[in-house]
Image (cartoon, rainbow, N blue to C red; front, side):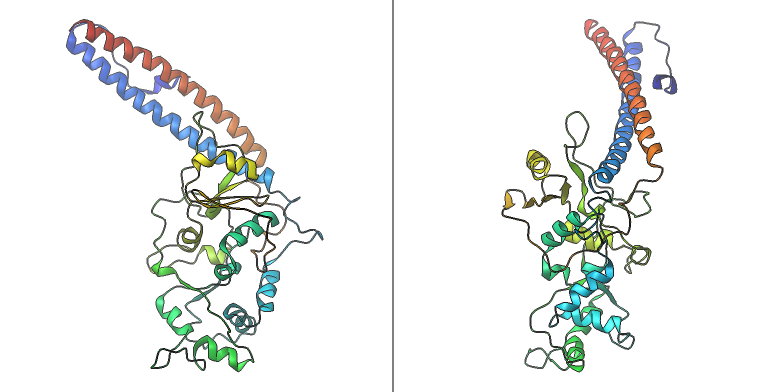
Length: 355
């Protein structure tokens, strides 16, 4: 059934100037409605295609290490613990040994960045971890400034008090912090200003890059901020202002970073990349005009993987079928747009001829 049947209909009789102006207004309203319908269908198609395409590119074949085992959260914590003289390793040791209950920052500290999300494949884990770098991956995340302030204390002359805060706790277990470390305060991060999808993972509603034909650039998988998977406990965590980890921490870290399947596809999509991009085969663009060259670097600490297969869209075959149906429906709407545009042009030509 034509979508024009859903629109308010108007008698097309009468050729006086006022009648033609009413017809023009009517056709313009119809077109606005149809374009809204077409854009909504296009968005739905893109969302499903990105979800399906991402599954094909990061399925279980690539979500395993070379020895056939999945990199777990426990593996990530073990990687952190090996860096003995780091703030992150001391924090993880205290947490693993139930020594944080009485600490001033315990209730406020969320965890180390590397342990707060999982991803679908080892390739994605390595490239996102390399993009953030070790200092950020080992950053300790706190909800408020009170938590950050409790991590480190200072003497009257401004020097770090190594007998207090995390430094003092490290000394108590025979470890010392021998370098600067990063702490991230969630309440100070400007959250994503847009909305969220109705996805169970509360992904951010960031408009996807589009070609003139309405599709995504070849190889585009998604935005990095929407490709990290949050466990239920992290998904439910919100700041005092009601913002979650994805819209604060991970949006602050990744912004609009795009993820592509291959380096060549990423390079071909340069005109759509403003805030950087990475590819599963190791390509990296920091931001517009800044390319990171050379071989992929093996990272010390990386994100754990989602156990089992990549996140398969619910009812996968139904999702594919829905894409086909949505495309058919959009083609009907686009046909209605063409017909309505012809009617509008005809009405405008009549009023022009009367001038």
